[in-house]
Length: 282
Image (tube, rainbow, N blue to C red; front, side, top):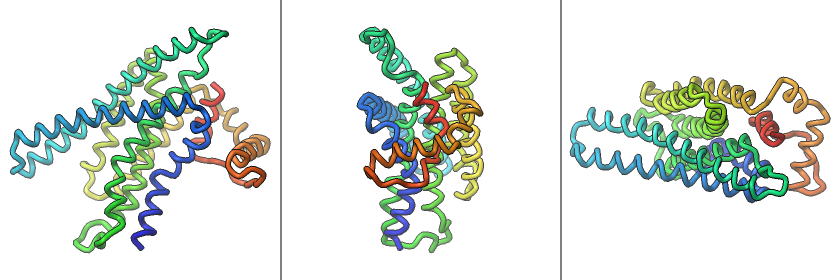
């Protein structure tokens, strides 16, 4: 049973992100580099926030439970702020790199658009964030022990997996919106991204039941996905085109030829397919 829980939670948490990486990033070396660099920037933000939290823990002595809980909340909020600061720094770095690529190009056009960079960078942030939040939980799911035997939630593992999935996709959407806000100098968009990041991170502190944090997180995820879709140039016509039979046939043949050669499936990738298609065509 523990093995089933492990693989089930792993596929829930990382399956969509892995599919997006395989279908939209893996074949382009430049996108792979941007994704890895984005993950590295997220790691830097985690390192600095962890250092601040560790110093605060040592300074207080670790005796008062309420004080330690307050420091934990402070650490999470500080980490969120630092992540967004590093997202902005990464945007500045990519913007300079994009200008350099355009200058070196014969037609003076960069081989990758800002929307594509935002999507790939956001996915890099999300994958690394999900990995650090879920790896230890997956390790515990292999046993020994039984979840819920002392009154804890028996849905701890699966709710953690769904929360990791939501945060991973949210980072992708936030990356698109954040970069768009920087490009168009819409600072209220950046403030909104930071505020929602703080809200989602604080949901687990506001609600003692793990399942109670999922509905608002997924509502925010859907809203952010819609906003990211339209901010990257999407429209209702794009949605109708993706859902058309011709579009389904094209996507299906492209995906299956890349993975299985001459074998064809009747289903296509559904997770945030619309926004990916728009970013691909930007």
